[in-house]
Length: 459
Image 1 (cartoon, rainbow, N blue to C red):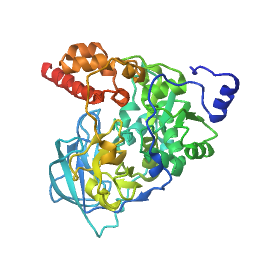
Image 2: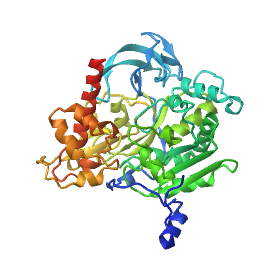
Image 3: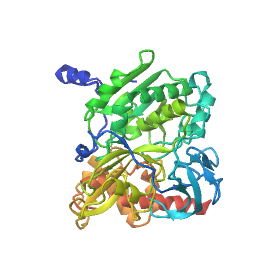
Image 4: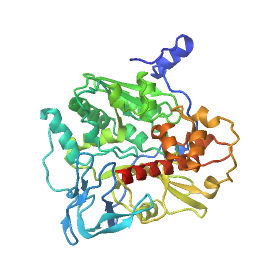
């Protein structure tokens, strides 16, 4: 099902750009701030003295440690196994000795059980010899299981186990795989550099996913502010598959699943539904490239590209970072903080979270580290709602943030559920446009936590 077609001169311009003429309503246009790192090629971060691997770094049930203090591990070895279907294993990101399995600061502010590995400074960091699966000879279930065993999760931030997405119920057949290369969050250029430097991996990962799902159509969506990425992907596109690279209007949150499906296919995902309910699977472009790497090298997910940026860090960079690297070590490699640095955010400024501890490790889903200065984080005073309606005009899901905020302040969780709190994706558009500086997204995040706790108690 295609999106609406725009005709005339505008339509010809959209066609030249690769747009299908579709899009989504509402949203916002925050300053991109990508110029700090968009042109910087990726470099490899030297291995730190210690890596810390929290057992909770993916959606679903945390992994279960299978190593103890004093165990020797090599890069790529399994150190925590998945528990249940919606879970993901964790592998050693560096060779060394397990220093301890204890509680450690987590990026979300809590203390979580983690596996600490003292890195062997004399190791070559070459993984053990392993069998590289030939994806062409595997059937779909074997492909999915290889991806599961490699610990691949969504690298766009949510860290949802990829093998779960690749196992939709038979009553919801998938006809199109969408690759999300929009990277609409300000500052971040992780996906951008992946597409520019590793386009062949993106296409191979997409090919593997299409085979696993029995799908014949793939679409890669990239915002138009990344023309070099679009060119690289189109230049390396396979000729034997129905794969298209589509330019997208630069607007936030273009990369949200429902928005991307609307923009690329013209399909609406109803409230309370998932992309599979409209025959679609959406996967982040870095996750797709990681799938290819699994079948190229046999190495599980032990490292990822991370953008270190913001005016509060001396040397912004795009770095290939071992999972579990401490924030402190990463910033030291980038020259340290400037005197006016005030806040460090994991992820982007719209949906990311502030980090309270420099020893917090980078997770599989850590897309970037943004260091904001005093001028960036100056928080004006909040005022009462003036009923201007800007939050309603900005919400891409047509929710009523004003109503939800009033209910949140009163602790009326049942009514918030009736007002479709579950559909809120915490994109922050409402808070961004609010002239009264009401922290709407934070209110809704706390409300979602309260609803989850209430359901847990009731169960």
